[in-house]
Each structure stands twice: as structure tokens, then as C-alpha cells.
Picture 1 (tube, rainbow, N blue to C red):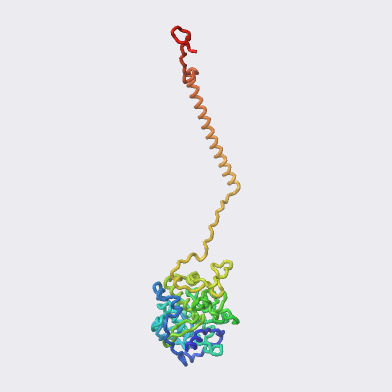
Picture 2 (picture 1 turned 90 degrees about the vertical axis):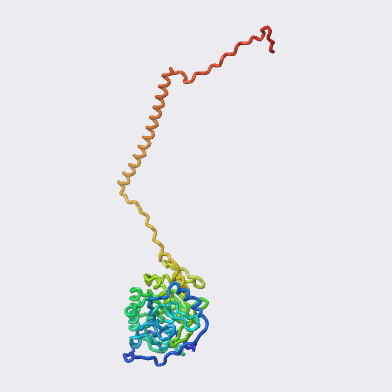
Length: 432
């Protein structure tokens, strides 16, 4: 059972989505064969150990944030999601309610975003306070022959589903765990309208990245403004199926991931479709903690706070603000850092332009002459003061000289003459 559900989880919509819309007779469509319930799996899943949702809950839970899961619908009665799922819409069978999931993929994706603990396992979504808005567009899944089976909406309905999620669905974040191999102008325009209206759009990068696989350009992940998500295993190494290219912005856990199954219990699955909801959940946490952040600012916060990719990034191209690795994007998702780090400016501040004086030649010449005149006046003043000092000193000397009759100011001292000695006087000894 685990193997069958894992295959379904890996499924992505790689068809061209060109089939016409199903007839109106499916308005009351009910699953012909509901997916089986999951199993009771013990232990804490590696993704929960890696992202530690209980630690994230001290910062944000996604409360008040609406996440549209455009997928196969969502089973609102599964214990992990009970009370967290809005009515949504069904663009596959044109039903007004998206709370039905015939293959389980949408339910599993939604549980990674807003799932609550199930049984004694350590499973929990990263944003358990968020509201899931299910938008149903596909029932496709992989079959045993390597192809796909099940219905899917047309491109036109897919574009309408995105517009509905933004409008009536009031989504703050859109998760697209599905892939097409061909671009479509209406879908691209719908994605652009969503981003322009402040909605964060997250999409899986695709599962055809193994050696020998075609690694086709995945849409909507490759559209501008979309956060494209690749997959890594429990060791942080890119999953061999994860596609690679400049459409990969970040990677997250996507191999051997535990998720809540429709009808209860847990299941294991792999695929970039499982990696994308971890990024969508992180976007929901950021929208709660930083409610004024634009989609570009949310994307930058996620990308700038990633953990380094194994082997490091490749060199950045001209104008890139960071190096991007085609297999890992900007690096490995780190929700805690995305919620707590203070980011620097998005781009270096522009250097202040040097102010160059602008003068005409005549004005410059006049300024130079005035400067020369000031210097000459200063030297003349200093010289004049010197002359006045010399003249004053000379006048004092002349006046004093006349008063003394030009005699020295200090008389020459006279030494008294020594009396003559007569050496031959009687009675005095003769000194020889």
C-alpha cells in the first residue's frame, strides 16, 4: 500500500492539459473508488526533524493566511486537516466544492502545509494555523506502465482556477504541485495577475531529472514570479529525479516524505510535488510574521536564508545578487532562518555622484584675480607693519641717544691703580 500511494504522490501533471472541459453531467461527481486510508507510522518523520514545526510555532503558525492548493482536491474529513479546509472549488467537474480527493495527492500536499499531529507520530504541517483552499483541477496519477491515467482540466480551466483562487478564494499563497511540459499564455497571464495582486506562487520543478530523462522545462515553475522548488533527500542531496535548471529557486525535502492520507493515517511519497508545500508553508509563515511583505520580498527572504547547497554555488553571472546552482537554486530551505534573520538591502546602495562645480571661464578668472589680490594685500599689510616697527624702534634709539649726549648708556668701569712698590726700602725684605 505504501508503494502504491508513493507512486501517486510522485505524480505530476505532465500532460499538456489540452483536453476539453468535462461535461456538466459531472457536477455531482463522486469518486468512483476513494483512495485507501493510510497507515499508522511510528516515529518522527525526517522532514519534521529537519524543519522543527514546534519551534517555528513560537514565531508563526500561518494563522489568518489562506493557502490555495490547486491539485486533486482535499479530503476535509481526514483527521490531520479537519477544521482547516475551506470549501474551495472544483474546476475539473465544475462543482462548487473542492473538498473531495479521488487519488489523495492534494490531501497529502495540503497536510504538509497545515496538517495537525496524527496519532503518536511526530508528523505535523509547518503552518498548522493556515487555512487550506482546495481548488480541484486533476485526478491524474502515474500508472503501472510508466504513463498517467485520470482526468485533468484544460489550460483555460487551469487559468480560471488560478484566477478564482486569487479572487473568490482570497488566497495569500498558491501551491502548484503539478507540472506541464508546455507553456500556455492564459496560464502565464493568470500567474502574473496573481503575483501582481500580492499572492505568493510556489510550484514544483518536476520529476524528470534523472540521467537519460528529458528534463523538460516545467511550467508553471518556469514562469516569472514563481518560486520553483526542487527536491532533496534526507541527506540534503538532490533527489535523482529532481529536475535542474534556472527555474529551480530553492530545494526542500521531497524524498521519502511522510504525509497525511485521505480517510486517516499516514503515507510515504516522493517527488518535487512534496517539496513544494514545505516552501508554500514557509511563505504562509512569512506572510503572517511580515504581513506587508510583497511576493518578491517573501521570495527573497526564502532564497536569502537558505542553507548552502552541497558543493557550493556556481559563480554568479553579471548583475546577479547571489550565486545560483542549477540543481539546488539558491540552496536548501531553512524556515527558521527565513522567519528570524534580518536581511540587508536587496541591492548595494548606489554611489553618491561627485558634485562637479560648474563655472564659466570669465567667472573663474574673476575669482582667481580676487584671490591673487587678497594674497597681495595680505603681504603688503605684513610688510607695512614690519616697516612701522623698524621706524618706531629707530626713533626710540635716536631720542635716547640725544638725551645722553651720545654717551654710552652704561659708563665704562674704572679699576683703581695699584700703588707703586719700592722693593729696596729699608726695613722691607728684598723679594727676589
